[in-house]
Length: 117
Image (cartoon, rainbow, N blue to C red; front, side, top):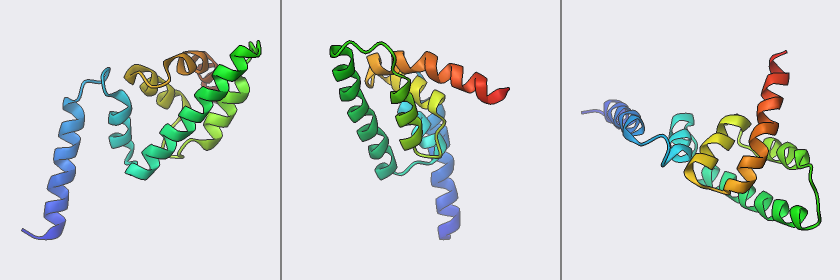
């Protein structure tokens, strides 16, 4: 079997495995596979989210009630293969920085509605 056929077979199996993975439990990993992110790209997303989560907690302690600047930062630093709202949904479903994602989700949803007008 030549290399192209082997690669095609591996890609096919990857798609099948992605379909088998529970959307709720591993939704971010599934999104990573669907969008074709590398391991380094995925780690960058996790790093950005972790840093934003720290900023979020600090801002809450200081009494902030508006967090749209965190969404802007998230969207600006997000890998271009991902859309902010779908990434936020997937991260939240997988249990990654849940409080931050719950705060950003309605803001991101409003932004997606604005983009469609």
